[in-house]
Image (cartoon, rainbow, N blue to C red):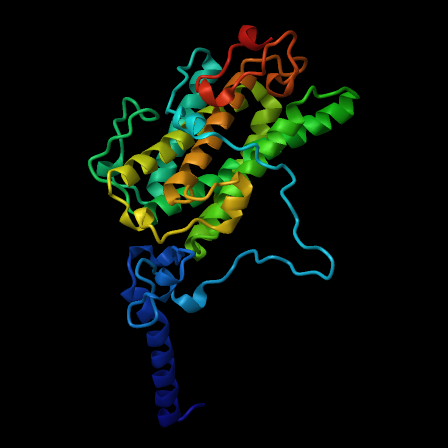
Length: 358
């Protein structure tokens, strides 16, 4: 047995260790549990700190920050380009994107819409969105005015959580359609490539945001749980009814377009000064992927590109939900007769009806 003196010394050491471990957590903000940080790429913000250990808008010590996916140096390979290069947008195309909502018509539509609303409630709850920060419940995917704006930290939490699950549906649908094509010994008529490219594009959104912040253990745990449930749910749903699943994804993309539209509005209204600063520069991965020109590399510009991507996914999935899942070709990659060009999914938020594209 330990003597009384030895026991007291051991307890004292344990108390000091516990104090040193817990004290930093208690001194941080409410977002400390997610160890969240924003990392501008300019040296000005990286050198600003509180007492030399914190950035001005960070809850994570500098020593904790790291590059999550640094470039792999090899002897002969200079760079690995994206598997699906981005086609890019004009400024007019990005400005033409607006929030939209396809009203439910069938029972499947109603189920997809109501389940999407439930998922949106869960996201708001998990990311700490207050009631005064929400929009009019009667127009949840088109209204953009709220009583109280979100902070940069809240927006980044929502972006990360949204993009971490948004890349799942395209991969699930593409995988199942690929296996279905192999079993039936038939072509898929262009669906697989579009679906896989969609999931790749969503992952690029996530990787871009990961260059700007470091989620903590709580956020990682939430992402892990959400992805596990969401992936298995999507597999089961797509096996039962691909049409309803595409409709659900269309409603999910409506939420994404609405989210990024609100962020743009709050930047324009001056509520997010850290993102409006001329010294804030978007990551290089975003500049290369979207081919962002000089002078158009602010946070607002980045969100405009991402919102346009989400608008494309919204139109594609709503349209695919209107087609014959076994036989119809993918209209967005098809060559049309005469001088007609393929449909533009970003410009029609409700999607195209089957008669319009076939």
